[in-house]
Image (tube, rainbow, N blue to C red; front, top):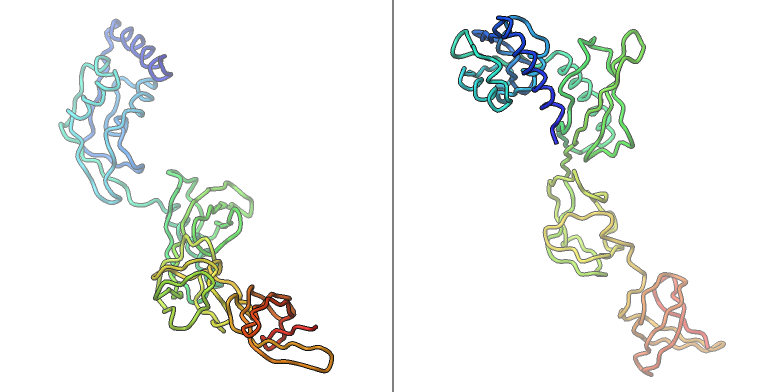
Length: 323
């Protein structure tokens, strides 16, 4: 099935053939040098059409000759490159003559002032937001930016908003609002990534599941936390009161999802057992069969009688069994 562009080329062929039959020869005259703004160079930008033809101009705008040089630099486009791309586009037979210099010097313009002001507005907005995250190093990266902007705009007529909740790191879709005389003129979507680096806790050894945490298990290290699914931990007061919720490999950054509050009595822990019957009380030791906190009822295995009893955990971590 033929595309719209192929139908357009066939229509253009018939139009130019009719013009040539009337004695009008279409000629492309190359410019000695030109300046482009976009990321690519088209045939329309390096030549002029004689006699002028709007239909041919539309076709030449779709003929890409290559990527443009970096801003402020230049590159050369030869006449042979132009002929080759015209042949690929099916336009070579319609343009019998190409005149002018054999090489066109194509310079890429410096960055547009509108883009510069948009970058400055986004940087100011992100810097202000990141002030709420002390001790975090960050770097801004643009992932998707429109190729053209409405402009020029004033230096103080840009407002930046975020689509969604600002998380302080990772992907964010921002919306730059161009204001003219206090009235919203247009909205420009810009996708950015905020790379963050923090001094976080990193495991120095493998930590097994339900193992109590110790100071010697971790060290402080600067790591990237951009794409962490959970909150990284930079410090953990009263570390001995926590245990590993999952297996933590050595060198792994510690996050809030990896740990949990350790129970007052762990499974397999040797605890003091208080057995009371009226005014008579007996103190011995037992092995906890299940974990629990204060006021929880758990099963214990008495070491002297080798019987399983059920008792209540007291505030100091012992187990009381009433008969």
